[in-house]
Amino acid sequence: MADTRETIVPLFESGRRRRRPGCRRPRGWEWGGLLFVGLLAGLAVVGLRDVEPAFPLLGGHAWTVARPESLAIVTRFDGPPAQVTGGDTLKVEGERIRLFGVDAPESGQACTRADGRSWPCGAEASAALKRLVAEAGGQVSCIIEVRDAGGWAVSTCEAGGLDLGAAMVRSGLALAGRQYSARYAALEAEAKHRGAGLWAGSFEAPWDWRRANPE
Image (cartoon, rainbow, N blue to C red):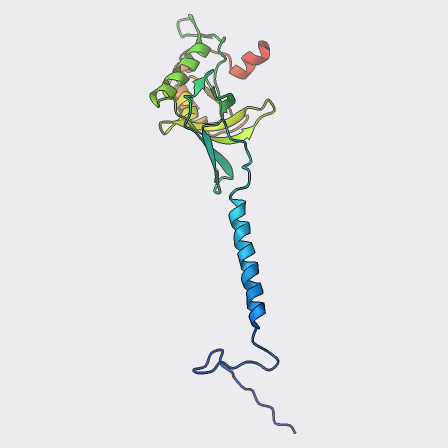
């Protein structure tokens, strides 16, 4: 009967490293090839940083940077001050921005106070947003959530570190756009409980007003 034995060979030994039969040391030109492949891989990774972002630059004074944690684009406007065009809309160098997750009364919309008097709730919502932006020197920082069918950049925007959508809903001058997001639903419930802004009287939801008053 043949003698069968098991031989344990350590991975590393003191002194010379043992090679298994049939193995050979890589030649010099093979090492060079591996280094070349590694260099190409490194250049490819660097090149990915220069790929055009998912959304275009918003004007000549804007810069964008990818946010890996949200796969969104942060756009900071460092040029001309943001121009408020409504209770939930802004314009920066021709780019139209709509606040994400909120819906404010339209500019020509009127609401009714608790005493029955009419008041221009749309104009007051726009004025409130202008004040918030002006207090930050006109500088806004937006995360573009999506572009709508009309080309608007629907965005979460801050001014002076304040979430503009949240501030408008908290003041009662905008509603939470639940058809798009429930992000500000709790703030809306709080404003309603306090009787703030629109909730101090009666009003028509902005989406209903637009349906009844098409442009």
